[in-house]
Structures are given as structure tokens and as C-alpha cells.
Amino acid sequence: MSPRAACRLETLGFTEVYDYVPGKADWRAHGLPVEGEHADLPTAGSLARDDVVTCGLNDRVGGVREHVERSPHGFALVTSNDAVILGRLRASAMQTAPADATAEEVMESGPSTVRADTSAGELAQRLAQRDLKTAIVSTPEGRLIGVVRRRDLEAARG
Amino acid sequence: MPSRIEIDRLHRLIGEGAQLVEVLPQAEYSEAHLPGAINVPLKTLDGQTTAGLERDRAIVVYCHDYL
Image (cartoon, rainbow over all chains, first blue to last red; front, side, top):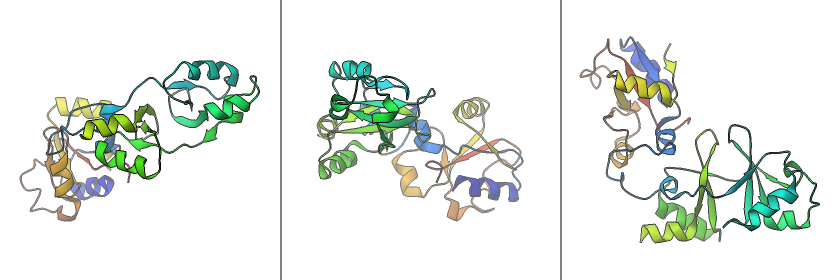
């Protein structure tokens, strides 16, 4: 939408036009403030926790499993060097995999993510409908922000 | 040709006094928008609705994300 608006502004005589393509979702993913009627409502981003275990594609499952056992979440996320989410390693899958298997060999590719500006109430409802306990929060470029728990979403919406 | 920018450049432009315009529909703007942004929905964007904006000053448009 914004590329068309930027182009239109140039046709209207604006001489220095910039297009912030990542947009409002990116702004909120950086934890920056907004104005408006919903500005103070809790969102996936505001409730996201940064305590999920992460690893690289070539990390060995045995080592990752030990970290996950000590974490509050039943999975690890496999990310690129610049934090783009590539996959998810469930504790159950790691239990049955050889300790020297790589994360890439055991992970589920492309787990679903939500944007930081998704409202807590809406997300809590979506997770409840699918009987999910957590959601992965990412930037529009797919970089990991954190994970948010359904119980935290439900508590925040009151 | 409009320049595509990321958040670092956006911060600099805002600091330099750029005009900031959200082009989403009014309802979405009312819920949440970047501080200081005005709203000119894409569907209403024309000479009349932009008459109050300065042609020779930097202007940044944005919507929700890449879509």
C-alpha cells in the first residue's frame, strides 16, 4: 500500500518522498511507542519473553536439549545468524533424536509466528481455539522478538 | 523514485522534521499510529487531501507492513 502512496505523492509534486515499507508493525516490533485509542492495550510484543532457547542449524541436539530442560518452554527455536526464525525443536522430538543429530535434521521448518502488534485479547482467543500454549513473536522480516504465553495474554486482557 | 527506508533512516528523518503520513484507513490510524503522524488514507490521496502538506519538505509514508 505505501509504495503506491509514495508514488502518488511524487505525481502530486512532492520532491523528497520516502517509503517506510516495514511500517507500523516494524515500529512496534522495536518496542517503540504509538499514539491512538489502542496505544496502551497489551500486545504480543509487549508481553513477549526473551527466555526461549535458541540455537543454530548446526548445533547438536544433545546440547540444545539440556538447555531446553532448564528453560520454561518445551522447545527451542532455530535461528539464522541475524535472528531470523528457521525452525522449532520440540523437546519431544529431541528426546528421540540422537544426541549428535543437528538442529537442522530434527527441527520443524517454518513455525507460525505472530506480529508484535497483535492484540493480547485477539491472540489469546486464537491460541485457545487451537489449544496452543505459546506463540512466537517476530518482526515483519521474521526476526525473533520472543515468545508469549497464552496464560500471560489471558491475564493481561483481564 | 521514492526511497525505501528502514527504521534507522526513519529516526533520522523524523529528527530532521520530516512529515509523517499513515496511509491506512482512518479506523486503523485511530487505533494506533506513529507519534506525530497524520492520516491520509490511500484511497483519498489527492491534491486536495495533501494541500496542507509541504511539497518541498521530506515526507515519509507508511502502512502496516510489506503488504
